[in-house]
Image (tube, rainbow, N blue to C red; front, side, top):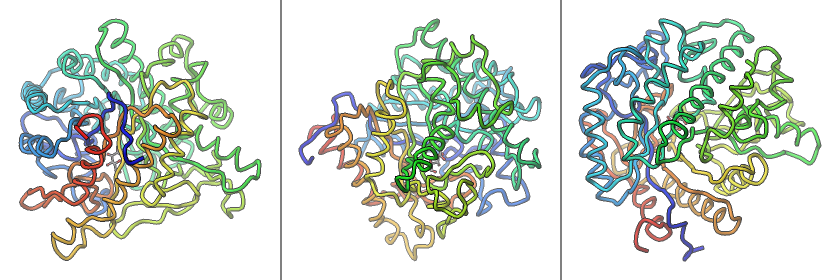
Length: 485
Ligand code: GCO
């Protein structure tokens, strides 16, 4: 494959999200998000008690970050727009400082020849929407999200080829609306209520996405493509036992089918597995809603994050394909976690862990998506992939961290695997965004977990390129379409 190249219109670059890199959490008119609330709660909601208050201060340092991307030749930057920076209360008055900020970010990217691929929502739900009506648990969120999305798209679409409405709806009721039980926002103290909250959140998330997508294509007639980013596992039967094949399909139904069968399937409805298993816990689409959701994505986007990903709801789904596993068919398996606290799998599932999966797992996953799960998708974009070196925050000195050879090896292997899927298997992969351009706030794991291709000093905010940044960029130099080979 050494001389092989990706298609001429292949998109490559890096991905990020507002709350994880911007900082300036209370500055320049920004309203609070649910994550400002979560990360500041007294009970340790974040493993190392860090918050998104400062992180990389990308809000103030974006010009230098963009200059660095330009300097190494990165052609595309995936970033999310902070909804509460634009609408501090989620709806109603607009914050002019927030708008001016993103005007400048887009202008700086364009000036440096870097394509923006914005995500409208990456989990930082405006806290006011949560306080006033429960955010994603209520149909009102569909119109509030539409109002926000229309404002942003009308303002920036002329600069954008690729829009994302929602980041990883699979985490509904996990990361961006509320925690059903346990440590975060214990709104629900029983499994059924928690599950109902999760699938209600998912329902309104899908409708919110679809309403924007329909408007984008049919009214606004936008010139770009639009989709949402999935997070999901590659699942593989652990044996030839028929029960394992059934279990693998159930896993896919609960992780990817949940949102993508309505979009890419024949009916605009949820998979039968979910309807049979969940009963009236799963909201029902009206016929009009099915028509809205069906076909509402222009391409399939996947973050092949296959760390510990069982939903932990033992009585609802066989989330392991290992029928010989003592816990079968329950999900409840304890994820193993790395020394930095990041779940790394394998847990109850033989699912290939994102962190320690062999790169061939990505090739198999891309084949499964296109050849088995959603054959009608015209193309697939890998919208996040990366490696959290479990020992990086414990390194004795900066140089030890900069030699991130396992992350470099990870990118080399995954990119080769992706190329093989394109060149040898004919899978229509349209892009790849590495996670992440520099270390940042990893949600419940805090800043102790480092995914960056640049090392971030959280005290003086300096960014220092790691070995993996050059491995990542050089790979595209020899295989990519955007740079002379
Ligand atoms: C996710 C989010 C990112 C993560 C990244 C590493 O997949 O959880 O989209 O915000 O930081 O994927 O886990």
